[in-house]
Image (cartoon, rainbow, N blue to C red):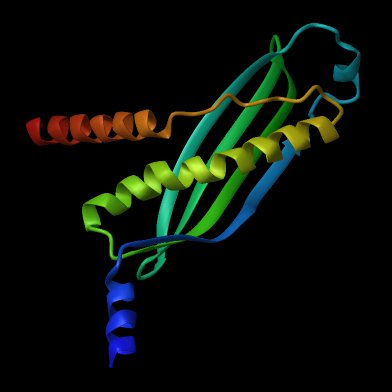
Length: 159
């Protein structure tokens, strides 16, 4: 009887665990090879980042971050790397309003070092200097997203 109570109590406890971390998608393009390797001009590098989450089953979520790194010399693309790093996370017995924050802040913070390594590895294997992505403040990004959504909802109600 006491064991059943303990098991029920444990199941009611808030829980967070990482089930799996994996590269969902990766691509590398070097459209101007081999000529681009002889150009000694310093390229400009731009980085785009996005993240999303979906429910797989009750209490189980897939969260992914997509990193796109584009390197250009003037109008010529040196390389384009895209990595979608994903993870399956178990989030149990957490208030509904907190799940979005966990999926939008905690999970991307866990995934980012893996995405950073995958991008750098692809770039080096392509024959270029490594691209080291700076740390990202996912909490600030989440707050910014929420503000944009609130503004969009407010402007939609005005029309």
